[in-house]
Each structure stands twice: as C-alpha cells, then as structure tokens.
Image (cartoon, rainbow, N blue to C red):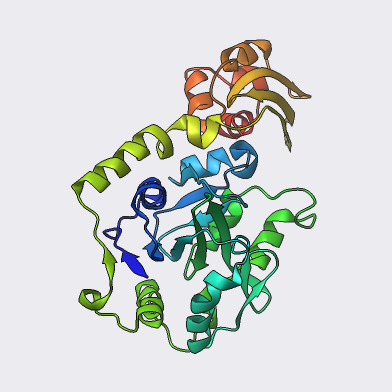
Length: 332
C-alpha cells in the first residue's frame, strides 16, 4: 500500500479533486491510502438533489462549503474535527459494497482506543448504536475507492442545522432525531487524543510505523497538482457540478409566522428557477408576482436568490414578517 500526502490541505474541493485525479490517472496495481480533513463543508452524494439535502441559508450564514462527490450515498458533514479516509484498490469482482474489507483497520484502531465500534446498517460505523462514520464507494472497471468519515470532534449542531431531514428517513421531530443518531468518537475515549493522533494511529496500524520516511508514498509532482487545480476549476469548484446537475424537481417550503404564513412552490430545472408561486395569508402592500418574476431563471441557491432580490423591500410584500426570515424561506 502507498500513502498519498495531501499536504494537510483543508479545502474539500481540492481534496475531492485529488482523490479523483489519483484514481483516474496515477493508480497502478498497488493499494493506496489518502487522508484528508476538511474545513466546514457538506459533501453531497453523486445522485442527490443538493437543494433537498441542505439548508442554503444555514450554509451561507455559517460559511459551509457544499461540494458534490463522485460516489453515491447520502450527504455528510465535514469540519476540522472530522477525519476522512479513502482506500483505493484494483476493482476486484465482489469487492464493491463490501465495506468490512475497508473499515476493518479503522475499527481495529477504535477498539484499541476503547471505542465500541462496529459496522452497522448499510455502510456505517456505529458506537453504542450511534453513527460515528458514513462510507461510500466509487468504481471503474479497473479500480475503485472506498472512502468514509470519522466524526471525531465535529460540531454536531452544524450537522443538524445544515442537513435537511428527509420525511420517512427520520422520525417526526427530524432535527432532534438526526442529532440523537450521530456521535463523536471523542465521547467514547477514556484518554483524550487529537484527530491527528487518530490519523497517526491508523497509519501505524496499516504500515507498522508512523515515521513518514519509512512509509511507502506515492510521489505527486507539480504536474499532478496542476491537474488537481484544473479539476477544481472545471468541476468541484463549479456551480454546475455542485448544484446544476440536480434533476428536475418541485420544491415546497412553508412556514407560519406570527404575521401569517408564506408557502413557496418552486419548479427547478437544471438548478434554476423555472416557475415559482408564492401563497399565504400574509398582508403586504405589493403583488408578490413581482417577486416571482425576479426569481425566474435564477440559480436556486441562497446567494443567487438573495442577489436577485437585493434592494427589494420585502416588508412591502409580506407585511410584518421579518425580511431575513422571508428571504430564507424564498431561497430555501
């Protein structure tokens, strides 16, 4: 196995681009191991509809980056208290969806630390029945990777605020349900360590040493990093990849304020507002069809909608409903 040094970069867009670049362009017959720790971000599964998975107003207000990955599965939250691992291997028949093959060294280290970790559900690592790791995979005919999160000391309040619970997936009190189903590894430790110490322990488990000079390493050169930067620009840093590839969908968002209810219905095509209607029993002076016209054709994300409605006096349309709360509802 060869270790991949990501230079301790914390940009989710760069780390996902690095992972894909190595998989597609630098892999030989060896196995490879990549670790990365990202600044606050939500990583969306390849087949998910971004606007249904995240709260745009929350991610905008908290500076959380939203990036789509090439593997399937659900949305996960990353921050500096979350360690991510990626095992890259030849694509052998029967290996895909066999998560126990890739999570075993991680679970072994957690056991050594006294964490009651076990593989559970479809692709999770659980401790005490609560999720501490989510995993996903991507495969080509000749190679694949299995990557996962390790919630070590993450801000779980951001997890519940930024991720939108799905009806039928969580109980009626969705936000509380999400918070109760996840846990940090640090909660189970008798002796505190850092997230970097956890990484070094996994490296030692796999390579038999923490001394990087003795760890077999895939050497990346300037040309590799130039390719990574180019992939960020054309893919992982682009609105089209992270939002625009959503399928056509209908979005309904409603909330009852003290001064009345706003009920927003949006048709989204290619990530942009194709049609919108605003209903409710609020009492404003102006006709909301003017707002609807301003939103048409605008990318359906918080920053874009807010920009399209900048300078608009929302009080004149919604009465005593706080303008920032009305905007958050309109923009998702």
